[in-house]
Image (cartoon, rainbow, N blue to C red):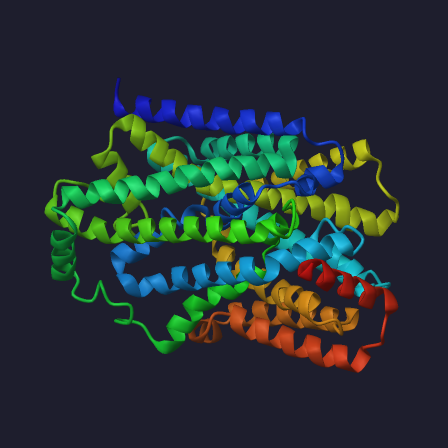
Length: 495
């Protein structure tokens, strides 16, 4: 049996397992709250691994190792910023958001929480947040489909569109029926698969290059600045990379995991598991990129497929060093990173359609079966639109990933923090801050001069925070219901 056959067997096992989990989760869904938030019964382990897997995407196994291979440790600042941001998010946001979203009229999505928390009678805030979520995540989801198509094209020579449809089809299938729980449990399995791959492969590669000391000496010989965090970068570059961590506070597909926890007390356990997973996987990805430098230098016959960006270094190492069946599961880990993010984005888009916009238009409470099938219809609609956007293999939607992260982080992040910690935030403060941040990110991100100086999330975040506070101070009026909910949230956390 040739290597490709072994790898296809491993991928088939993985894809069938994902479908089976989705079909199992289908039986747990009885209403829209179950479908978009899992009935708030997620364990800390599932929430932590699900948040990590849906966050990291293919960047962790392809982009980060490639960057370290090409440049060195100076490219690790983004990973450092993300790890710090994730820790703060679990520590500061998770317990409060879990309590407050339930206290504030049992809000099951981020737009509904803003609407209920601020008593926005204009409904403008809910519409704006829903539309922004839908637009950004539809493009974000299409980028995942493009990545899936290119994965099968480069790994197995499968035509791009068939690879894209295969990834999209399997992901939509288990998300369509399994909903939030299906996405979360598949994310957990995918997170464990990614962790195993990122630990096993670098350890094996170390032995192949003669151990840590020999690896270090070879790397420095090839690239003298590879092991420096500061060589070849600037202060502004470090700040821009580390500022990716600010984005965590406003990412709907991540913070909904906090809302779905069984209790706010689970946030402590979730933080330890989630950050432990993140540290190990990031270290593994960085190690794979650096060890790749030593390995390909010592093995000139070995082929690095992507010589321009080295984003295949992890895949090439696995196919060179491991049995084809094991390397097939490593390929499955890369596919898992793509699919876990895609499924989470589809669920958030579904909730934006079924719970947020539909709720604003009709002002009717959905029956359980109606809400459940409306949520599934939302997944299907968004998936079709995303697939159409991804149909061109040279589509520029991949460029929107960093832009979308900045957009969500700057538009939603300050509002999440202010909603949880400052009772005087008003609906008009939130609306002005949201609009100003979105415009700032769009203008800054599309200017080569400005974006070259500083990542657009920083000015967008600051503009939102300042305007939201100033406008809220000018428009604040005491509201007994809001104050009572805020006091109840604080009392629950202290109890």
